[in-house]
Length: 278
Length: 297
Image (cartoon, helix red, strand yellow):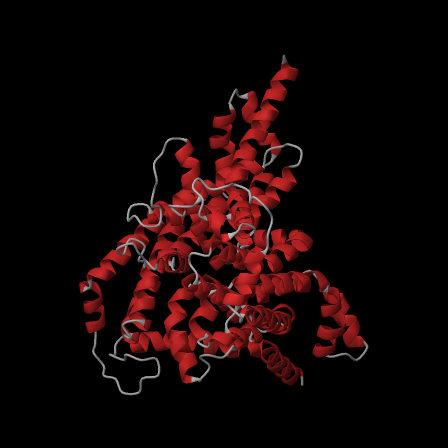
């Protein structure tokens, strides 16, 4: 009795999980299926769930309709790389300041770093646009990249929390050997901080790849677009070519999907720690 | 001598944090100050040099604009209806994923995937699924005998569709709840079990109180996010149909980039900031009654 009871219970759990899975993975499967259909097949009523035959013409059409696709993909990678480098370098340097010095200014300024995390970003959308207009940065990548090189609050926080766990004795040994603050940072702290560097690299990459609003507001020229902004324009151009749109969506998911496969642990830990997707 | 050293070290401290000081001043203090300043002027363009001070008239105009009240109502809907629905959805999924069955890790991966999809791709996918002629959703509903529904084109449905989209990409909140559920001590469940509590009772008497700090955290983050709802509304239906998804931040965007009234957009931004601060403050105050922190008396 209790044996069969358990089997019923286990089965019930799988049924629930699988039903929910259909709701969550279903739309992604529908995208995959649509991108491999012919244009004609997507107009069938009722629709076919899986493509009648696999074909990848949609990708060909996508790159024909929009010759800038390659350019946008390259742009997205370039911008993301520049943001990642800036985030790691600047945030680690600032976090070292906030973790290893004993001055009253440190205790007064660090709460302000944390406070900026709580400020809703959209209230700064318009005044930032005014600022970047006056700096003549609109229609360049500078509004996306420069802020990353000047210390993001999230990453400063992540680095600082990590640095606090490194024993101070290691610093002191280096001072005895004639080292200064900078040598401690570069020779002691950073070599021990690989895990947090990896986390920051992943988070900064995911964040910049997912960013839509920044590039959408500041970049005006088609050949400077990121992939997301380009795809948004494509929706307007070919709203009825469903396979090509699905192919475009698929391409924009692949880099993050691959990263997630290899770095799932880091992403999950980071989310739980900071409460954001990045 | 010692004093000199100390001063020198303070200088080095400021050198280390100088990137943040520059970034904070340039990309935070300056824009913040700019908005407060512009809100009392009639500047129209981002680089405007000739403008007049108009006192509080931007604030008066703002409240007299019917589109402003509409956008405030829409955003109110996303906060008052959207936040509880999305939070409950996250909690429900987290409870599902916390079940003790084989292969659960694989399920968890799939639930998190939509969260990592770029928003433009999400919108493309939703247009494919919800397409009233050729979408899979209406086809499935037709099998159940439910007639064709125009999901994106009906005023009554667009907001629920957007909230559903938020549940679809709510993986981060689910992860936070999942971590909290794992931290609930097992012996508490055993204790109420001995008291004769069933599953539902133990959920309300043990699980909910124990994870209440995480609930507060998620509710605050989601509230702030929904107050700022914009990209989804812009990309799905451009705020339509008939202003049904015209959110507060969408209105700010339109004031600036369509009406070219930058001073009005700044006025609205300041109002939004005040509103979000007030609501967050009230949430924190109210939560003292509901949130249980371990280690507290």
